[in-house]
Image (cartoon, rainbow, N blue to C red; front, side, top):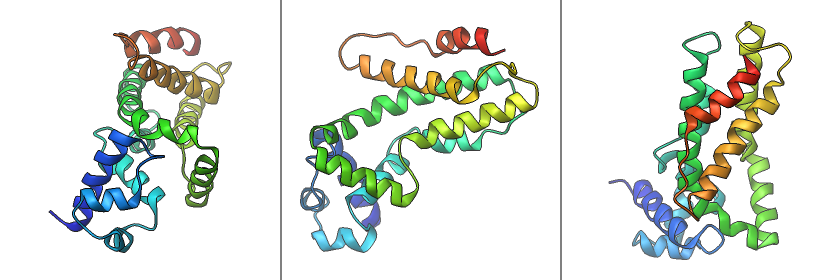
Amino acid sequence: MTTRDRILDAAAHVMRTKGLARATTKEIAKAASLSEAALYKHFQDKTDLFLAVLKERTPRDLTALITSLRPGEGNLKKTLIHVAETAIGFYTETFPIAASIFSEPSLLAAHNEALQQRGTGPHVPAKALGDYLRAEQEKGRLSPESDPQASADLILGTCQYHAFLSFFTEWESDPEKLVETLWNGLA
C-alpha cells in the first residue's frame, strides 16, 4: 500500500467518524501512522484530502458517472434511474463526512472558497446532469417544454433528501419511482 493510499484510508475513516469539521490533519496523520508533514507531500490541504476521499474512497463517484453519460445513447429513463441510485448511495455515504462543516460558518466559508478555487463543489453534478439533459432535449429525447436544469435539480435534490431521511428512519428509497414520476413530466 502506498503512503498516499494510507493517508486516504485514514482520512476517510477520520472524516466518516468525526465529520469534516472535526477531522484535523494531525488526527489523520496519526491514524495513518505518519507525520503531519507527510500528508502535505501528497495533498495541498484538508480540502484536497476531502476531495480525494470523495473521489477515491467512496464506491460511487457521482460526478464521474454523470460526466461519462453520452447523449443519445441507451435508454434515457434507465440511465436516469441509474443516476438516481448512484446519487442516493453517494449522498448517503458522504453526508456524515460533510454535515459537520455546516456547524462552523468560518470553516464552511473557507471550504467553499477552496472548492471555488479548484472549480468544484456540490453544484458540479447538478450542472453536469443539467447539461446532459439539455443535450438529450436537443436530440428530441425530452420534451422541449421541460427545463433541463430544474429537472436535474429535482432528481439530485430528491436523492439528497432520501439519503438524509435514511439517517432518521427506515426510509425506503425507490429511484425507479422517483424517475418515473419525473419522467411523466419530462418525456
